[in-house]
Image (cartoon, rainbow, N blue to C red):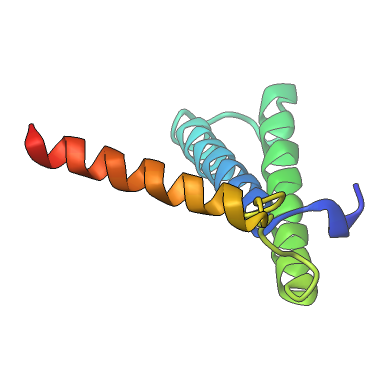
Length: 105
């Protein structure tokens, strides 16, 4: 995935998801340790591998966020916003009418 295609919100959401996943895997590993799983047990190894993968992904997301903040921008909320003065005037009138109706209630 091209870093320039990510928004800050997307990076933050991915970070939160992988952080939650890593916390879950940490808890699973701690429970497995408490139950005296052998370090060579296939399930134990898979949990450790998944934890390492989540950590690597979190590190990569942190690097992407840190190094590319100038390129990671929120999409404009006003993209394609109308600039026609007549249309804007009508929108303003409609909004004013809606506010007046709310006040009457």
